[in-house]
Length: 395
Image (cartoon, rainbow, N blue to C red):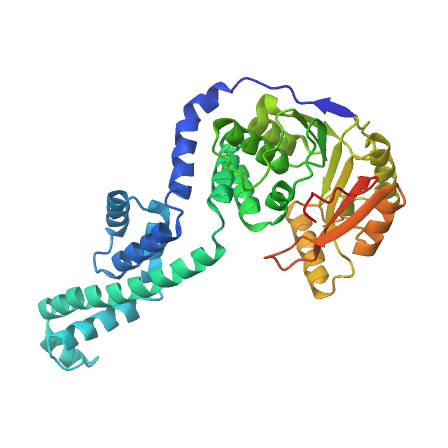
């Protein structure tokens, strides 16, 4: 049974909380370029090495605003002076300060400490912290730059990630952090956008759409194309394509509706029973393994019945023949189920060959490609076309 989620006006309470959520989002995401992230770490580490305890937060915020850095990352980096570290850090800074003025290392005895005096130790600490802080700041900022640059993707991907996740602000902090994390670390969504094969018209049906990440990404890409900022590296999704999602969990479906508004139809329904509308493309992404073997095959039968000749069926699932990577995938799914309180959740995984066989038996020309790049999992993307593949579509 399906229940449509009607597009609702913006709740009154959100009109008051949106500025705060926008501020939080901007604080979280500001200064995300490799250089600025490295600078935020460097400034934060330097401040954390200074002896101005109790004022690190104010100093970090002030310097981050002055240099237009991410304030949260700057302050987090200042925690290099954690309670378990700062005694050793202070001692090292005092010793370096003494070295700078040509004094012998400080012996940790009562007599030596009394002889050194509080004033002299303070001066040693001040100058030593400047040198130690600068050295650590440069080293950790450089390491941050190398790590971030290695993981950095193109400006189009970054802008789509930012704009897509920003649509979830109204759905709450967890939703936009979750979406942002998925877009950054799961290769699936941008691979689907970059590969081509989206229908030019008709309906794209996302079954088990969750928060509607794929649909929202497509809607964001269309919006960028309309504004003329999408570029020509990828083919922009057609403005004539209807976006339609079905999700069994009403709260999660509501997050999709908040992100998409009238740009998509989001319905709440059980995929095992829901009547499926005709669709030129149907997506089942990380969904089928939650169903039993018989339920999987019954759902695929109903999907095959609503996809026309030339239409597509796309699914991503774990490859049960994936060895150690599949073991990690299964363990991660079990942990996620426990975290949701579903202690008796059952899964039914299949091998890549079995998934391809199921689609081929239902009249689809099939191909499969790995879809877990950059992750420790054994995911595979299986694409089926009623008829034959278009050679112009990237395999």
